Each structure stands twice: as C-alpha cells, then as structure tokens.
Length: 109
Length: 119
Image (cartoon, rainbow over all chains, first blue to last red; front, side, top):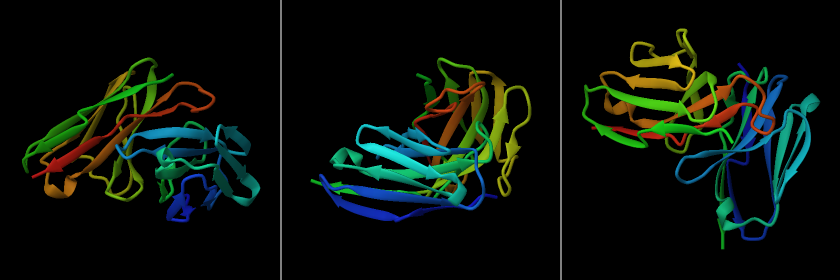
C-alpha cells in the first residue's frame, strides 16, 4: 500500500511564527487531504489538494504530485492552531484514505 | 455542510461485554462509510470500509468477527465491538462519503469519535 510520511513529527512554535509541514507519499495519488485534529479528537478538513496550491486564511497548501509531496503552511500562528495535523492520501478520489503519522503542533502564547 | 453524528462519544464497559457505536450522516446519503481506530498519540488506522447493503471490507489484520460492521441504510452504519477486552480500548472514528464530489471535502466527513475504555 501507499506509504505516507509526515515531518516534523513535533513542532513547537511561538505565537505569531510561521511554519511549514511536509507530507511525502510513495505512489501517485488522485486524492490528498490535510486535516487538523483538535484536542477533543474531532478531525477538521483543511484542504482537498491532490495538486496545485490553495489558500484559506492563514493556511495554505501546495501539492507537487509529480514529486509526491505536499506542504502545509501556517502563517502568523495562534494558540488555537495547536493540535495534530494529518495528511491523508488515496489512489482515487472518494476511495479509502491512508493517513500519515501526523505532525503534533504546539503554539505557545 | 455535511454532518456526521457519532454516538456515544465516550463509553466504559466491562471486559467480555459488547459495545455498539453508531455513525449517522445527518444531511446526506452516505454510500460508503469508513471506520478508523486511533491509539493515543498515533495516526488513524483504517479498520474497514462499509457500503450500504453489502458486507464490509476489512483491512488486513482486523478481526471481522470481533468488529461487526453493519451499514443497513444510507444514513447509518454501526460498529459493534464484541466480547471487548482491555486491548480493545481505543478511539474509534467513522467517516462517511456521499455519492458525489463535495468540492472542498470531496465527500469525506468525519464523526467526532468514540473513546472506548474496557475495564
């Protein structure tokens, strides 16, 4: 199956700092999504981005499908950005997702 | 937007008993539902995929007789942990997919999860 690796595994930020999270995957995919898991366990969909670049407020994401990686950018981080960020990929849009190991982010005030 | 309701959010049961977890799509028809398991500080591991009206497809290593999945309608899937043991304690999350693209979500909506503790 597809292997998904995320880096770094842990990230501590000072409020206001910018950061980049990376997701590498081992095979071509037609589905790639970024999620944020809050402290209560709820997964929140951030981006559906099998290719290209998208932005939503302070968050943006870029996927370079030909090189099998995706980046999630967090700008001007806030304490509410704390949590775990997961990248998940699938071979076909709408099929099962394989999750990476996640990046645990802690934003300190 | 699409909403998936998962109940209960938290359950404690005695070893040897069975526990049922429900996953409902509230405002869309879920042709496919996925069940995940997450151990503390780990990633989500897919347990099974269920399609309405047919048998679930289990991932390798998941005991289908222990984790019974029923997807009897387009809005409800259930996961029953049978004869639960302490090692079954975990966070279980369901995800539902609608029949078509939802653009931003592309059809995936997650429930809020169920924390199962077997004592």
